[in-house]
Image 1: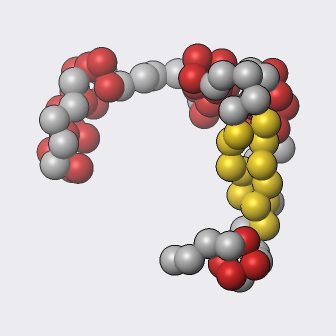
Image 2 (image 1 turned 90 degrees about the vertical axis):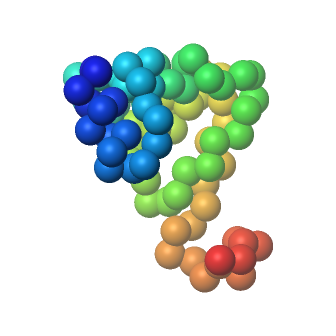
Image 3 (image 1 turned 180 degrees about the vertical axis):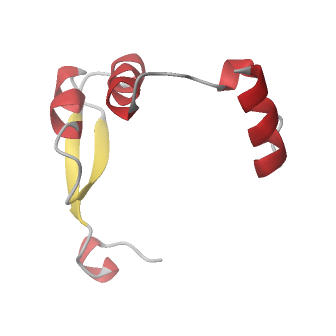
Length: 82
């Protein structure tokens, strides 16, 4: 973790430490832990659609609410401006 923090500190120009580095068996497990650790009941999580199919059940398991935004739609249809 120390070496990764050092490498990415240089790459991104940020002051990162070992506390900023999480190592896991893959993004699925890391996202699940993140959702469970961060989300409060009914917190909304924006998911671009199409999205990876595991995100919705993980968000629901953490008692959050996935909000799907059509990634292919023009920004104006979503009320967003770029």
